[in-house]
Amino acid sequence: MTTQTLPLPDGALLDEAAVHSLFLDARTVQTFTSQEVTDAQVAAAYDLARWAPTAMNTSPLRVALVRSAAARERLVQHMAPGNRDRVLAAPLALVVAADPAFHRHAATLVPHAPDFEASFEPQVEARERMSRDNAWLQAGYLLLALRGVGLGVGAMGGMDAAGVDADLFADQGWRTLLVLTVGHPEGEGTTRPRAPRLTFPQASTTL
Ligand SMILES: Cc1cc2nc3c(=O)[nH]c(=O)nc-3n(C[C@H](O)[C@H](O)[C@H](O)COP(=O)(O)O)c2cc1C
Image 1 (spheres, rainbow, N blue to C red):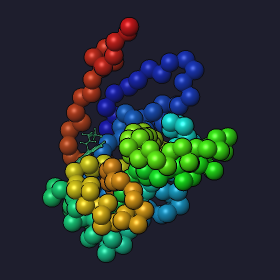
Image 2 (image 1 turned 45 degrees about the vertical axis):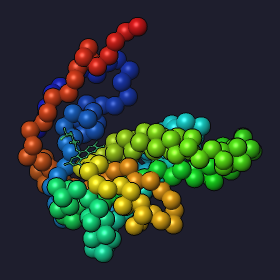
Image 3 (image 1 turned 30 degrees about the horizontal axis):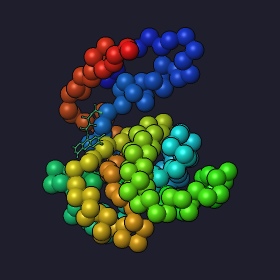
Image 4 (image 1 turned 180 degrees about the vertical axis):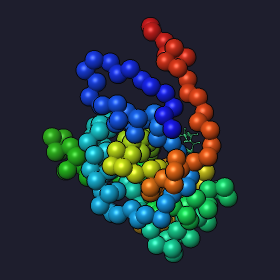
């Protein structure tokens, strides 16, 4: 199962087991056991992820828990065909979205800037862009936090996101980014061979 070993540098905060569970051994899960995922588990992951940083503390990530058969059927209609069965079979699906109206939470998020909400209100395009950029960042935090609380995660971007927005988020105005399936992996959770990643020299430069 272990794909590689990693000598941790002095001062590393994560131990070997955590590094393997979060990064080295964790796979994109396609098959789950029938074990339930509770709201409390998802909330615990969110309660970790929410402390990781966003620009101006905008915190635009929003999450919809898709649990009932009726809600799943609604979501699945908008998924790419290859993703549908996975959403139906997973113990729980999360629609991860961005909220362009993040500025409405200014009193909570930026109490030190009393004019934050009013100044962002007319900046529609900037709010759209900022909410997407920062919610994507938070989506990554959330994925790792879900792993951190002991869950396996599958990620899917293949869908008609505008269709999901119109169908599920007409009231909130949220913008769908991706769907995460969560649960406990059946075995390794996938039969796909692990694809290599770029090495640090391939993916970096020193200026
Ligand atoms: C943002 C994002 C979108 C993805 N969209 C899909 C998808 O629509 N369908 C799918 O089968 N896999 C999708 N994946 C899964 C990736 O292909 C997978 O995470 C990647 O190949 C790494 O696999 P591994 O974690 O098993 O190494 C997506 C992953 C991410 C992070």
